[in-house]
Length: 227
Image (cartoon, rainbow, N blue to C red; front, top):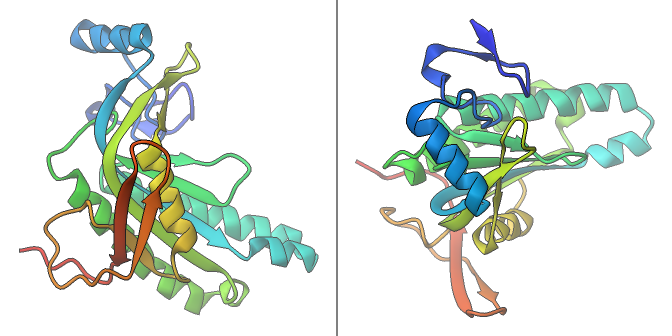
């Protein structure tokens, strides 16, 4: 068993191309080297990605109540467990530095034909985990979690030349962030871009005002009625 040179996480032979924890490139031979060089030359590329943010609210209030140590232990534990769920569905987890959010990316660096479905299933798994975790820990009773899921074309590329650290940028990433901000406590909002769901009721609408102007409808996700 070897470790990632960037995040020091354990990796297996299956993860030989990219670290499933942080998305860093692990080898530069053959086709992989060519792909990485092309990304660096172009600065990245546009891909269809399914992404969601997981945001925890209320930890800052607990800090004000001077129980800092327990707050930080529980916050780190929550973020780490969310990242574990994301990796278990073959997604890439990016923890937002100095924040209480985690960004889940499905479709980069490795893409799967069912990435939108993976993202939805992962989000539901996280929601179910959170429901039980809040019941088990008194400190978390006043903490809320929100998730916003969106699928669309976005830039992905690598920063930090030595290790090729994955990042994603674009309007569609911002839409996921806005859905997370609009989401009711301990629920999931999904955009209408994700097809294949039945019996979903539209409960809101985002209007993107900068060119090109577009409308994004969204609804709450409570189950996945896929066959």
